[in-house]
Length: 237
Ligand SMILES: Cc1cc2nc3c(=O)[nH]c(=O)nc-3n(C[C@H](O)[C@H](O)[C@H](O)COP(=O)(O)OP(=O)(O)OC[C@H]3O[C@@H](n4cnc5c(N)ncnc54)[C@H](O)[C@@H]3O)c2cc1C
Image 1 (tube, rainbow, N blue to C red):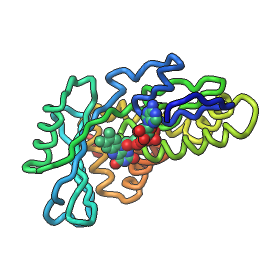
Image 2 (cartoon, rainbow, N blue to C red):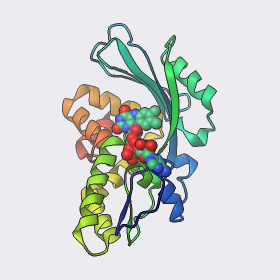
Image 3 (spheres, rainbow, N blue to C red):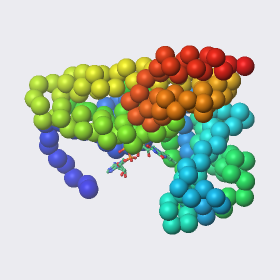
């Protein structure tokens, strides 16, 4: 909606290309802290009813394709990789075909994903950045909905609490996600070596508790646990 509004606090939840973020002078993530992914809809893969398929590749790693069945015979399919690799639309489509051969996807759209390895420091003051506008996407998985909902709720709480909303929100984010963000950044750095990722996948395949720890780290607010590190180290080849 166009027009002018006056408010005590602005919560900028306007996504990866945030206008508000730019208006306060914060630039975008660096290309190696930014992913790009293309998503569309295709007939579900045979025999994958209720099964979420994720395929990774050493070629152009870190990159992966997915096929998530919707329950109506179709699947949400897509492919993503880092912007720093210089990929374009044709490259994304080629990646999708390489990992999901023969997939006939429609309604394909691509979008950028600002990873939390490049998040700006939340400033004091009246502008609070949440979700993709704050670069809160998990650098291991490209998952951002959990962080968008969580940070939006924390920003809303800070906006009504009184005092310096920016400082209150920064502390709340740090308390709730600080440790996780450090661990997921470290894991993302280590995961650039495909041998490390292979070892983690093997460890997760062998032990449900490691699997659960890795899922928590990649999709929510988990840590890089001693259990995961030990199990993966044993499986390094
Ligand atoms: C292809 C792809 C697949 C993904 N898959 C997953 C997944 O499976 N799981 C997951 O957790 N995450 C996934 N993500 C990431 C996830 O989509 C985002 O992290 C999440 O949507 C961020 O939420 P947000 O509210 O911060 O931003 P958005 O969802 O982008 O919402 C921002 C909103 O602001 C609006 N807006 C922007 N500018 C303006 C303006 N100037 N005026 C008015 N409105 C404006 C936009 O229209 C939009 O509605 C995926 C991303 C991509 C690109």
